View 1 (spheres, one colour):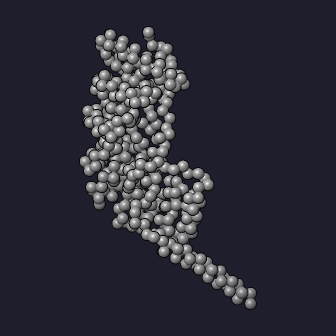
View 2 (cartoon, rainbow, N blue to C red; view 1 turned 90 degrees about the horizontal axis):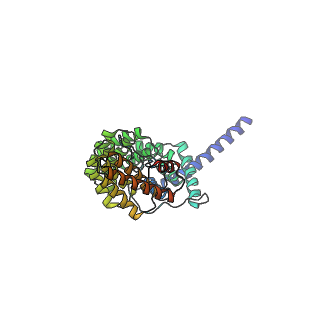
View 3 (cartoon, rainbow, N blue to C red; view 1 turned 180 degrees about the horizontal axis):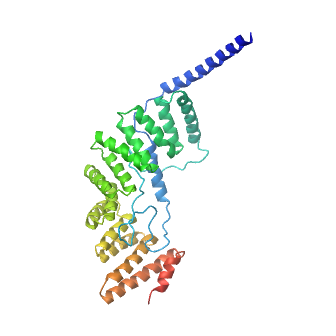
Length: 353
């Protein structure tokens, strides 16, 4: 009798569990299919723009590199590239990312959506609608580290979907898994050789690993397909590292037509001019930034370093003295804006009058 009762209870539990699973299964099968690119890359771009808008402008010493800068060979002033791990998104938006508060209802909904998706995936790991729901929820929750593997699973389920494979690679770049990103992107461009976005991200991944020649070839292809200011600015960074100063200046001139007030582009252009011995041209580029941003400490400090280099390279004593006077003046202006620069203060104190 006890055995019959136990068997009856077991069957009832199994029937209830099956019923719950079927309810969840019906919910996902009835969901609207995803017809547009996955949203996480748009959010990554918005996040980057929001972060860039709030970055501090002070530097600790003359010529100090910005975060994640790429240093040009044998250069005293560092190139100032964009973030190395920024991949081009499927679509772009100019709106900054909204501030996500812990009690944001969207966060609670995303957490519930994630839990529901994973309940289905626990019994059916290849359930595509549930997997897409999981990816969307992870994006809303900004759990970037978990996205690449989930996108990779989706890409394996849809081997012919190039857009999903592109998103997978972009997510890998964002979390700095560059080696894997290169593998995915190289297979992607075998099928879509004219995809400028894929070439852009491939160049980003190679550049982040210091593969300069490979990055150069990828940037050349990306620029040939879509000569956007962003692609030309990023190729210029590689050209600076390779010491191709004139070619870098051509790309920077094109990039600066779209962003004439960008101090990083100006800094890279000044670097190239200085390496060619055109100290006056380098000064004029940096002074153009100061005309619009007179208290920009990084630019003032780059001018200090430029003046020091120009004075050392100028055989004319009067011209060298003029450079030194200008350098002292720029250092004083920089300290007036940000007094907490002990290295710059020591440098200025050591300069002869």
